[in-house]
Amino acid sequence: MQPSLIAANIQCPILSQAKLETREFLVERSRIRRMERGEGIFLHQTPARSCFVVMNGWVKLYRILDSGDEAVLRMHTRGEAFAFADVLRRGDHQYGADAASECLLLEIPADALRQVLNDDPAFGAILLSHSFEQIDALSDQIEALKCQSGIQRVAAFLRYHARPKGNHLFVTLPYEKVLMAAYLGIKPESLSRALAKLRQHGVVAVDGGLEITDQGALDELIASRAVERRMAAR
Amino acid sequence: MQPSLIAANIQCPILSQAKLETREFLVERSRIRRMERGEGIFLHQTPARSCFVVMNGWVKLYRILDSGDEAVLRMHTRGEAFAFADVLRRGDHQYGADAASECLLLEIPADALRQVLNDDPAFGAILLSHSFEQIDALSDQIEALKCQSGIQRVAAFLRYHARPKGNHLFVTLPYEKVLMAAYLGIKPESLSRALAKLRQHGVVAVDGGLEITDQGALDELIASRAVERRMAAR
DNA sequence: CGCCCTCTTGAACCAGTTCAAGCGCAGTGG
DNA sequence: CCACTGCGCTTGAACTGGTTCAAGAGGGCG
Image 1 (cartoon, each protein chain N blue to C red):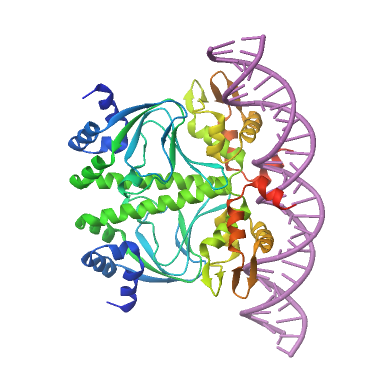
Image 2 (cartoon, each protein chain N blue to C red):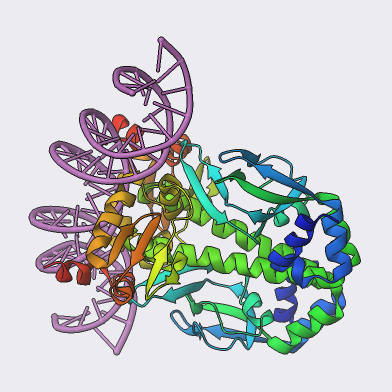
């Protein structure tokens, strides 16, 4: 087995929770695919012939509406899996998938996945708990979209992607701002303005990313409501 | 077995797909609960001791944010199940649940569900496909929230709940407008104005509900984008 | 009758979009 | 080497969809 294939095992919760035999079977039947930024992985409403695990980079799951706009449903990165549900239902993809950055994917053919689910009863439980996590992530998004303003969602996004560095938090923006805006459900212009406003809340641009100098202020902004924000601005 | 218990079997996809033995075991271990409108079923972040199937009426799944606003995540009606994921993970509820109308619930205790999952391997697959449907429903909501205006979401909501009646479509609003607004992610006032505007698109108020006289116009509105809507208004 | 509750309407205001222009930068070709 | 172009991002100004706050209409009920 190639070292890169072994690496895939370690990173992905679905694979690493499965027993060795299952994991090896899946990886042997799979192939590694390298995709360029912007390259299509599969289209919405086309037959699901494989499912995927992200080994590196970012993948965008999206839908194009009748109106022509694009709705970005999820962004996936290292270790995360997608299109498993579509494959197991033997139906069409419920969304399109594009490489959001240069990325490395493990492509698992449909029949391999189905066979594993047949042979290894424990694998069903792993998939079930994986799909529960999907539900949580989607619920969180709905919560944010229904109750938070654009700026709050931007702030929460930064907070989520921030990592400690020195005595501050540091955020490396994971992908282009156009994409980030689409994911957050706002226009690129609004994202730009939101980031400008966040400077007043302790978010400073440094080379290669953003630094959160006042974590408390940011958390307060995220938890506040519109009326309070207006008061505070005076 | 009580007749009302048998009725529960027929209505719910999760139960009716399960084999007879499983279904009977679950129903025997469950109890029927009648709830008044507004009554709490369980609270967010409390231990999940039971899961539920709606036999009648409407149930609201929601979260209260730090800011104090309420995010309505899902509305469930006859035959639909909720809190299964929370129970199987042996954790806390990921959302609160209230009776949105007077309703009848089948309450399945946690241990009964877990035992069934243990004894009947096919039941795992049923739950898996059920959770895939949850994911679809949540994805649809995110799509709508990110790309459609409030009026479009209202129109789509009506379209979804409409039933043929005579040679038109007829919608009985399933619950109060305050709740409907929260579900759609707008304020009650905006919903009221949206419904007023929809009169120009073939939605007339008749006793007990709304009638869609021009289905084409409504579908067109749902699929249009902001710019086009502005053009059409001139 | 008065009271509560749901829903509607109006007017001012704000958040986010739209359209247009402009900046900085990498790549390309003369 | 510099002009040209394309791309990602920002900024400005006008505008719109939705919110907010306040008032009022209408129905059900003690």
